[in-house]
Length: 230
Image 1: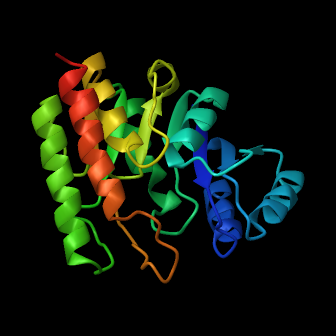
Image 2: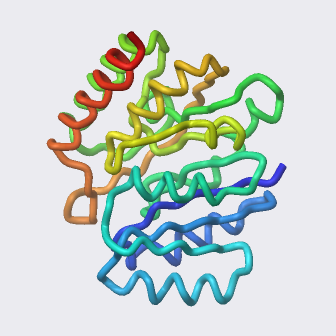
């Protein structure tokens, strides 16, 4: 199967070369679509070099910063692989675990696979209240969708391309996670969850999600999981 990796990217010059190198090392036929969301730190210059050196890398440039959701919409629309997987441009998630996410789809058991940071694998010890917030948002999402996920907010989501390209997504920022989850649940497709490791970074290291994104996630859970379902 051909794997399209969609990588939203914003001001990640410190990590972009390394993460792209690790992605391209994986033993799959890979199409890497990097959507730069208006970077201003020199990331775009590095992306131009990477695209010139690697034919499997495609770079899409957003004219201005719009958010992760907008970048994902662009990447999903451009994907041509059999499977589509989301990869952040930092080093929090390890591409060497792609096989875990792909396997349930390859075996015909799943249409969508979530990688869970809370399902028993190794992780860097960081912010307690972040983990509480993530679990709370997952609980609220599960109540709205009737899924039993342990990590709705995870970056690692893998889809059959025909599934992800049927999603009509609206959220521009991190509200895209609960929106995708609600709309996947409404499609009635088969969802699996697998454990992944997690090397979270601090705000000093470039972490971008904040408290306001948590409130937006609650809004998205209500809008897409409750109101639009009723």
